[in-house]
Amino acid sequence: MNKIFLFLICLLTSNLLEAQQNVYAFRVSFKNKNGTLSFADSLQFLSQTALNRRSKQGISLDSTDLPIVQHYIDTTVIVSNAIGVHNKSKWFNQIVVLTYDSSKVADILALPIVQDVKLVAVSTLGNFKMKSNEEKKIDKFPDVEPITVKKTRGTPLTYGTAFQQIDMINGDCLHDMGYKGEGIKIAVFDVNFRRVDSCNAYSTLRQQGRIKDSYDFARDTPFVYSMGVPSDHGMNVMGCMAAYEPGTYVGTAPNADFYLYITEASAYEFPIEEDNWLSAAERADSIGVDMINSSLGYNKFDAPLHLSSYTYADLNGHKTLIAKTANMAVAKGIFVANAQGNEGAGAWHYLLTPADGDSVFSVGSVDGSGIWASSGYGPNASGQIKPDAVALGKAAMLIGGDCAPGASSGSSFATPILCGGIACLWQALPTLTTWQLRQIVRMSGSKYSVLENGTDSSTAFTLGYGIPNLCKAFEIATNTSDIQNINYHFALYPNPTNGIFTVNSFNQQQDLFSYTIMDLQGKVIKQSDRVYQNGFTSDALNHLPSGTYILLLSTHHQIYSTKIIKQ
Image (cartoon, rainbow, N blue to C red):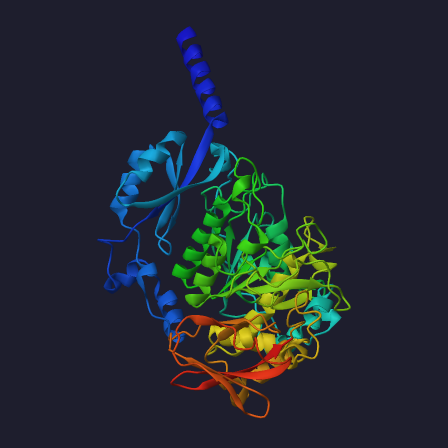
């Protein structure tokens, strides 16, 4: 009896010490993928749906699609004495291992297969793994006869308290045409989705089986409805798109399919959350998701990793891991909408990452009158206009913790409101690429013409291209003369410029291009004597007087033209 009691005491003590002991998370990058699978084995690492999405947009497979060499993972686990592999990334050829022994970093670095090692988190095991008694049984939602969401007129009687926010972007116009997001796959990256499995606002979503996948990448479990995580944020965000209670509250994409991914850890703010976001993005890509909605953003990290925090200069669109990840997702054919952040009125002042991403569609917030409402200022550190667009974020209506509609504020809610509307637009225009979709939404914005004409750039870094009109975007896309110039996408920034400007090329075919600068009378001022593929920076406007000029970017397929303003 005493021996049994002593054994139990030792076991409990051991478990307690393990729970309190620090776990170190190291991001390990490998030098190559020698010996991995070939492209002929693509169905082993990408679904047919994902391959179809790539094919539709003319996107080829490349080395970033190939898996990490398993031998590299196994070797690193052994050398680091790892208790687990928390993240794997084929895109960046890296993993995150968890270990109790921080001294193992030297042994990992000594491996000839390893390029780099970085500490990305220090916490206790419970913050990386969900406790078994916290996770209730994970069942599929009950199968029932599908419920048809009927076509309705866009009125407050239909949308209830959500009418103002969909009316602002003219998303109800798309609903009236019958486009409510059917067939569009939206991955939602957030902190928790508790009550999505129980609130009546999501009953249609559950009954139709349109929650297609879920995973908590922060705590390594498929369960995403934990009541132990003190946040309803993910559920609030979901309601802006997915809720369906006619006359009470209807979201902007009530018929879309949803993929619920937790990437944010509520217990800490560490760089590993970027790795979680990366894991979710790769899973979304491999499944064949069309869109990512992320109401998350980062700049500062907690001690002892506070020195890994970002400065504004780091937010240049392609430096942080999470921005590179978001850009990569777009390169794979996924439309990424990310919240601008809410730091505009605070000491930080600027946007957060990955909203700074070159290829990311960043969303700021306005009030009901269309006035800026404290979202982070753009541009990104490279001068690119951010946000791309704005939507209602001050006193936006959402589904609250009591499962009833309530008001809250932030770009966290402006983003899904607009993302859901864009999903309906993509349903209506399924042949568009992500770049075309992004550009027509910008072109429909309330500030697009004044930015293009250079008549008023005063709100460029608070409102971006303004409040989109999604039915206007539909009209733009169905006008062949307008859509022609969107087949090849180039990012030009800063614009207006003091003389130096940068052009980045994002066209899917990676065509070579040259550039020409003309004045408004058609006189050629500068013509490049070389061709480019990814982009260039030029000081060609330095010696010119202030005014408006025409920039022509020429591929062997066509000529893209835009106005550039010299201040």
